[in-house]
Image (cartoon, rainbow over all chains, first blue to last red; front, side, top):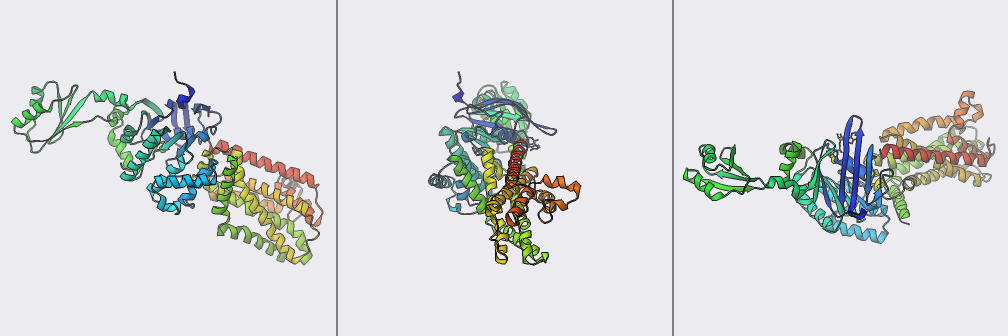
Length: 328
Length: 245
Ligand SMILES: Nc1ncnc2c1ncn2[C@@H]1O[C@H](COP(=O)(O)OP(=O)(O)OP(=O)(O)O)[C@@H](O)[C@H]1O
Ligand SMILES: [Mg+2]
């Protein structure tokens, strides 16, 4: 039996429309205290709209919201003291320095001067921005801006943190560093609501994931459960060092339990419901003049789950990433 | 206590980033200086007329000094999204908006004393009733600031805020009895004059500087205070409805 303390965020029947666009439709979910909850969906799915409603920046057309047990349905800003928010675009002050931005944000939460300065220094250090502390925020690079925006979001040590696409549009090293920081916050007990359209990121970080498409949640489950049905499928790719004739038919004859396809020349993909034994396969191929360069087990990913559930191809998601300037 | 730390820091941040910047200093202070100089010279009726023009010039300095500032501290911050940061903070909206407006109110009061200081060099202001003049200046400043807030919240672009403020400001120069008595207005414009907050402020300033106010000081104060409260409340309601929409 879950008590109120175990549930950090509870949302029922949430809906929001902008003109003709139904941005969010009948969204229900619960986020447990201390959980890292992923909200995954393509561009325009309704992720930011949902965050805005949860954080008191937008009023839902319908539905109820509870944050940390506080009913925020009628009073959207009632739980502001519990939450920290890192928006998809920076909303810090371009004319203030990094240090002053953090100090100002801390002051908004009522922190005293000495505490503000100590905390700002600590975070600048943690986010590798100490050297830039005195420079105008407006002159920061994209990655630096993102890091300072995250620092500003956690300056008051919120119990519940909302992160809207924290790693979009920054380089690989910074993204990795950020994921590390997010992981650390999670370990320290912060409840995290993370939106992303990077499937790998969600898979690596999250305890549970909700898939959202066109404003509707299509599936919510733990990462383990989501990947399970596909895990039961075993996939292997065999690459050849030399050109070979098409052996698919003879392979299918010899190994009836396995399913063979050739996605590209010089490559055979093997799928089965049981573990695939490599030895007999390779021997069979080499006996017929093929030179096997590599036999590789393919780990099924959340991406496959996503494609299966939503019908949105992985390539579409990848294109979205490139469009929004992100790279992993 | 926590709320006051937030309040104070919002106020001082606005001062550092906006009010004390050269463009605002020059616009805020040179504008009233220019107004005053122009009116003092143009009146051409000798030094005695300065005290008859002073109420109008003082009121205009406040009006122009305050209304434009809200376009920056509110509309601009809403536009570049930093206003969201304030809405995310655990502060009551009333206190937040008071923090965002107190700077402009203070700025308006300072502006009011530019023409007063200039006049003090030219004529004897010994007869001025400061006990009426100062509350009048403060309330005019509050009312103009909240009028600016009302406008800043109603628009989404900074230039719209400027245009929309002129829609209020210029008619007020002529309708509020600043330079021409309301009794000289055409009959059909008189009700309009009494619907504008500045009319009551101007009446108090006239009374304080050279006597001859139409309404009593307490009545003027009460009506002006009611305008302030009304404009502030409508602005807050608009923020709740339009910005947390
Ligand atoms: N203020 C608004 N006015 C009008 N339409 C809006 C507004 N905000 C969002 N929308 C629309 O609502 C839908 C959901 O948008 P939202 O920003 O929530 O998507 P998202 O999942 O965050 O996408 P992204 O990955 O691009 O950030 C979109 O169709 C968007 O155009
Ligand atoms: Mg978004």
